[in-house]
Image 1: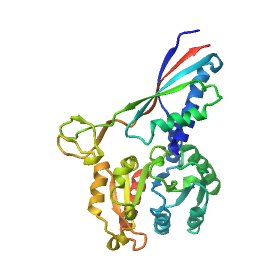
Image 2 (image 1 turned 180 degrees about the vertical axis):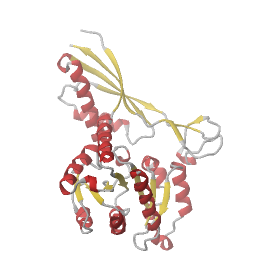
Image 3 (image 1 turned 120 degrees about the vertical axis):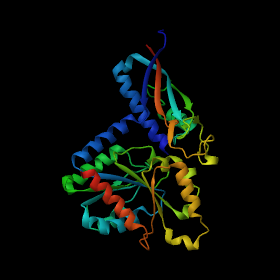
Length: 118
Length: 226
């Protein structure tokens, strides 16, 4: 299950970030993620995996907050943006064209970290 | 108690993997070595495709394989019979290769052969239609296989894999006469998910489509080496 690998990557990134802040002197309260709808990540699974992985660690009291970024594309003909739907083959409703350009929905991002100093 | 501080970092969760993938790609480029990432569900025919492909390909281009599998090296053993350098990468419980694993594999490959002598490195990823699509390994091109026994709807059900692919190989087409399968519906679903991907129908039994597949590879190698 790749939420485990995602969690490992997330914790490594947090370690890297915290080393620059002097890890012993801070408490991470919230890790704000942006996860796109057009990714392979299931937000609930990521949160559960993270919570299990950080038990007893310096991130034990931190909480994951996930903002889901909508899957949005752009019509290659009229340039209008739209929300592609699997049911109609991701085609643009305006011109019925195939999805060529994705504007958003592929994000796997740590947007910000809320912390306080001890 | 201090007030909370919000640090906006805007960092890709997988940035360490992406960073290592970039380093892998630089290594490949320095060796003038084209790298293909071959992905599919388990049983779509990756290893058999490579067996047939490399019989001819290795006569024209110096080839090597990194062979990813979760728990065995059975596929690596099959490909070693072709007398080309093969490095098995056993991932344990990971359902995909990542950039670190491929970096490790490349270091083992360097002990078998000088990569400067190679033209192409084929990386057979772990059989999985989900995870490999999200984890870059430093490849130049992604090749996704889909066998006709899996059904016409798979590009819609697993869109990330097929969206990310540069080439989609429809495999086992020799079975078409025996299945109630609509190849045009599959092609339509592929185009819906990824209108830019090249698509080739192949059969490892009849060698249908192998001329086009070999030509695709040759063109990529020759263009890369210019």
